[in-house]
Image (cartoon, rainbow, N blue to C red):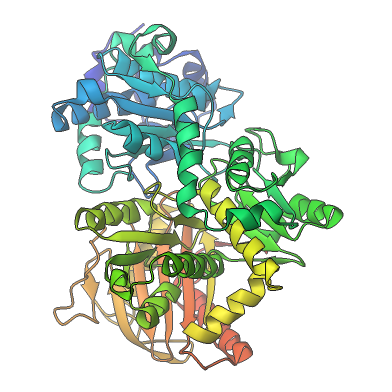
Length: 614
């Protein structure tokens, strides 16, 4: 075998015109990888897939809105044993520098149930290798002994006083993917500048330490501890902080159906219902147990709505259940449907949950002066309905950049000044009720929705009826969220460059759908025409694309690239004032502007974009 110092490959230049270079790269992977990686790279070489080799070997993963996320497979740009070891070695060095007491605080490590049969790569093994890297440096590791919901990791980090946490998951991504989500000592996902610092340390830690491969350390090391029983018990006890009507729950005749989407959620949602005094929800039998192939759904994302909720809705009809709850595979997000059959969007569900959390907070805090320290948060691409609540009710509302890592960071900042965040959300069905976990949590959200529904049905009201009541009081907020798929980064760059130079150099579009564009905010470049100095209030994020347009008729529209998938997402919302209730005209106007925005600015046909299937 060709002997090359491991650090050499950090500077290795690959020339696709010379196959001996490809052979050299292959030998490098032979030197640092295991058998299945060798087989994948060798097969690509033999079949002449030079571009695929370039994609896998000439770049590394970077931290997006949900940590490191990529397909499982061989190569530095994918998730595999090697890249997880390298990432953890870099994280170890960063944490050792950041925390003088790192050796006593340790890290929390959890995992979901993803697996790739062909390669043997699976979340549990990657979690055990993560633990091995830390254990071989005498760092205590709280490694869960079985799969857990993603929110259990940040919850454990805070409760155990750990320096950081790692969750091995790709959430709702396709079955081919996996990921590595990192949490800071405050329980929030890491954000800038820590993510960039960790990446720098990863680049300096590419040679695997000899003991980093020894996953048996997770069984043999006295520094390894299983936190499962303690954390699960404490989490279920802490659910009391968002349980307001236990006596009513125990008597509720309402039936619920729950799907865990072949993921980790079943056992934990069942326990959460018992903690609230409910009978457990009826599980969808075909989707109850973990299965990394997600055989019953076209994609493991409950946000896709009725098309992926078919089994749940059918079961609910047979069982005469009024409410369907669906957690995504790592149980940090929640979809909800109500008989017959209204599938709520993330924004609609946030309006209901925001109302519910405020209603109960006011019931337990009769002094209006307390409202001065109450906050609700939402990402900037989400509905402005909480802003409308705040304007009328007198609490504070703030926006963050997309991604719950920014919400978690803001929660930590507000807590330091004695403020309380009682609800936060992102439109992609991510919700945080209360302050148990500084991250989205599908388990607690599921049981909070159940209690809200039970309360409303006891008053002969449905969730949908209450949503209409909310809009009557605070103004109708009609929104559309969708996407197009674009797998070519150069095409994405060309699209957004054209928008920034629409009619002339450095000029944005002046209208859309026949309506004048009043303001443009571009967080990629830091430009905001609504500010006196034309500078963004939100942090500049040069690594992703996001432009927001505010139209004269009150519609707010955003185009952005996804941080986890090859998508360009678009979000439009009509924010009507209270009293304006001609819903059909609002919906018609929103549809017109949305279609114009997509056709005029994204040009799907010209750019060969794949439209979302309906």
